[in-house]
Length: 334
Image 1 (tube, rainbow, N blue to C red):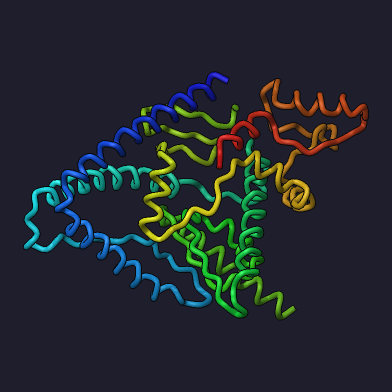
Image 2: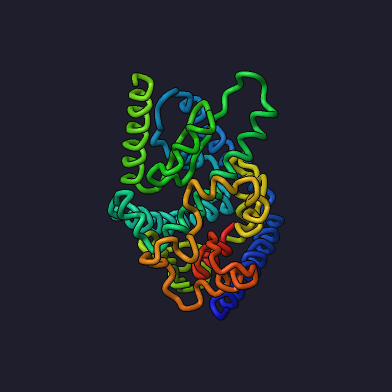
């Protein structure tokens, strides 16, 4: 509870700080209305790059290793407005910091050793990862269904999978029947592994035709170091959500929905009940094999499950659950 309280306190402080910065930016914007021409030129440059990229995407049957980065050339020499110059200098400083952290994050993921399915099944967070995969599967199916119901017959469905990692969702997109997929990630090694996985899936498809204690967070104002057992150990950042939505809108991205994982589970658990079992997203409690060991190590990890069985009045009942530590980690996500 202390960690949750600390998280809420940091989020409140970060949001308040972002609001104050936003107010300050509005005041500066009012004083520098003459700079609108400079801003328009910069935005147009971004839009032009984005338009060019769009024409490069329609390459059927391949995974593009293109990370969409809109590079902005220096403003023309005839623009001498001091406000524009100061703005560019501030952006340059921000980009330097961003590049530094980007290299740290990319280096972290590039150094993670690729492990086989057998090794991953021994992980402390195997059920947590499977549960999150179930959530992604349900969301992908929900929104692809909405898109297909609303689109014209034979209209293509193109998807950009940002932060695709090693391509763990390729099968989900394949089952979704999309037309074209673009995968991008900050880690080049992950993209190489994603490409290998895609090639493997394509080859197998051809053959078929022929025949609590799991995570820790150290808070430092808006930046924090996040550790997830054996998977993540690098800097991440608190972002004021309204500002994130505004930034995404600038590049043509529209927020469709935000929903906490716990709320999504309540909404989808009946519809996705069978898939939960197929994906081994929940741990059997008590284990069917008396010699098996539960993944949770904290004494309180399964108190909720034990109480549920006692309340049901069935001593031989086995249920599917997450450990308390895993559930608390999931409940922090949207």
